[in-house]
Image (cartoon, rainbow, N blue to C red; front, top):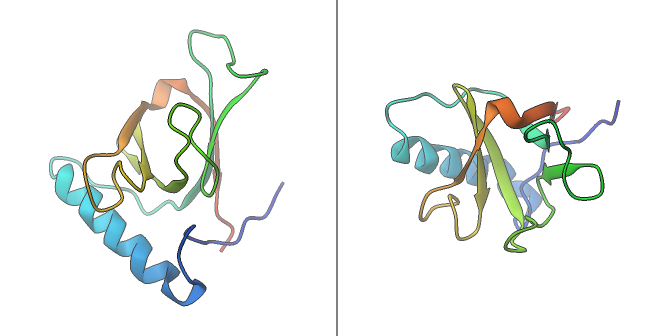
Length: 113
């Protein structure tokens, strides 16, 4: 299994924790009816209607671009049966994150530390 040390893209290493918590707090304020879990998610592998997408896999990963808009994934949060994908313009301190139905997620990889 891959080990992925915790980071926040586009941010200096000494600010990872501060920025992550600010983004989490902002996202929580946009979704006050549900509580974000404490899982620190690095990657999601998605499957929809039994068919994997994009050359066999559709992967959302912190630090990599989102396929539809090319923006870098800043953070991935889990809230009840949903996953929230935050990019600079969606969820990372403005607008709302992209919501992914947990039924479409076939694998979750967490940061190792």
